[in-house]
Each structure stands twice: as structure tokens, then as C-alpha cells.
Length: 210
Image (tube, rainbow, N blue to C red; front, side, top):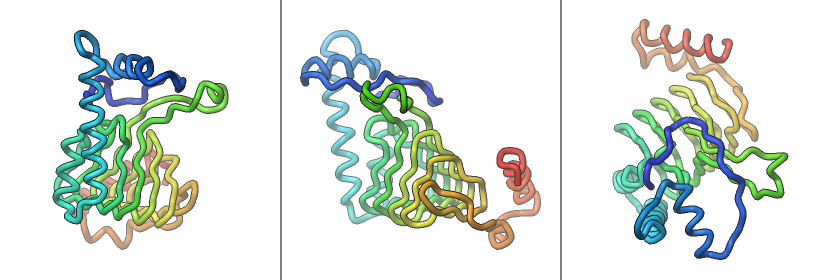
């Protein structure tokens, strides 16, 4: 999808369901498509990105899944594993950044936007916000990640968890919503130089208080 927004939290209009051709015009403009054949160009790119996602979910080889998600605009570093049946935001894939050595096990949903209907506009915010999965994080099976979340370096998210808020580095988190259950820093220290390890702990202390 065309990267028309700066990758930071942005307000969005609430969703209004309209007849197809009218909705297509609204959505094309919302995504920055203007000028001649704007609706046709948007529909082609949106359809292409959708099928790249569909194919990536069912491909048996990780390397192909990663390549297809990169083609959609997802920012993916090296040595990343993406399991089968993983859905990365169908509309704003370029709002997702996945660090080196990350493992996303399978049947995961990573969402960067929410657009409730106008009916719920007073109770639920409509917005798009980046999701960052830092180096060596591990998302177990069926973890869902909601917009605006950062998952810290080296952290593990337990199977079936729903991540609604950012998770510190080097921890084990679980639940719906996911909460920190264990500090993994002592066991993961072997993977870092002393300077790197202290840098991560200082960042964790500054941002999360422990």
C-alpha cells in the first residue's frame, strides 16, 4: 500500500458504510490517491496487497512468507521467522517494523489501525499507530498485537495473549491484556556484552520503571 502517512499515531475518521463505488472514492482519497483513475489505481494496489497477504498466510516456507510481507511494505529485518496464518495489518502494513531475529510463531494478528463505526465514535477512538517488534522478541502461537504497541527486545509473549500496551525488553508477558509475569534479563544476559546489556536495562528503567 502507498505510504502516504507519516509513521506515527494519526487520527482517522470513523467508518461509515456506503455503496461500493461511493465508498471506493472516499477510501481512495483517504489513502492519498488523487487525479486520473485514482479509484482504479487504489483498487488495483489494495487488491494486490490483499492477495500478497493471503498467499503469505498459506505458504509453507518462511523465506517466501517474509518476502511477500516485505513486498506489502512491512519493514522486516534479517533472520526473522514468520509462521503460517500470520496476518499483518491489511491496510497499513508499512506501520509495522519487525526487528532482527524476531520469531512470530503462527496464527497471529498484528494490527496498526482501528476504525469503529460512527455509532461508537464517543466510546472508541479511530486511529492508526505504528507497531514495533524489537530484536529477538518471540510471539508465541495466536498472539494478537493491537495498534501503537512496542514489544521490547528479547521479550516473550505467551500463546493466546492480547497485547494492548507496550511490553518492556527482556520479560515474559502473558494474558489478555498481556502483563509482565517474569523478568528474563538474568537468563538472557549471556547474549549480550556487558555494555549492551546495561544499555537495555537502563532503557527499560527509564521507559517502564524497572
